[in-house]
Image (cartoon, rainbow, N blue to C red; front, side, top):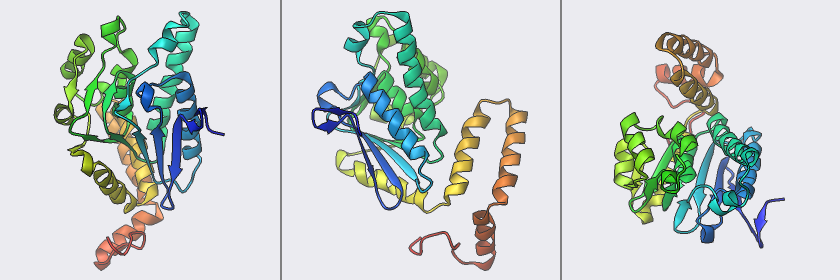
Length: 267
């Protein structure tokens, strides 16, 4: 059963025949805040996708004017206990880490405002496409709360001083600036949003799942290591990747000047 508000799920989950999953934040009237119910449902759905051996891509989207306005501040104010806050932020961090650990690429489809933990969600995704009118901020400081957990992926997307300015001032940046700083990959007109997301999805689907899963895991692991350890891990990962049937077929296809068997004929 999905968590619902009235008759609608708080997070809508769709999957197509290609193994493309879409999770849609579905509380537009509350600007898709990450309430306890939404976080719990996101976690449940991420666990479902992680268990899907045929999954290829996850797109995280949202309904309404806002992509996600962060945590539910009214809910937070109603329970002023340390253990409650520790549990809440641990719950949110688990969701973010689940996105990182998924063996498939995760694309944020950003159609509007992304602030605080909503900006964190965009930063945590592997790729992001935003409409040109989208705005991004980590403005918890405006209510006396430094956006500590959003700072974790934010500083891994952009330069430290750029991230720190946003965190210290609560200032917002537009989509073009978010693109320049590395927070999003593409900035497009609203009517091009879905087509641009689909272009990325199609490009990923044309590549072997095993290599992408191995590469995503390595990408994030090596980033946290010193350079010598990173090269050691990367070399070992590439050696193991070479033992995959898809890699052997890909090399033979290159030598034979033909398309590899795992690539769709249209590629």
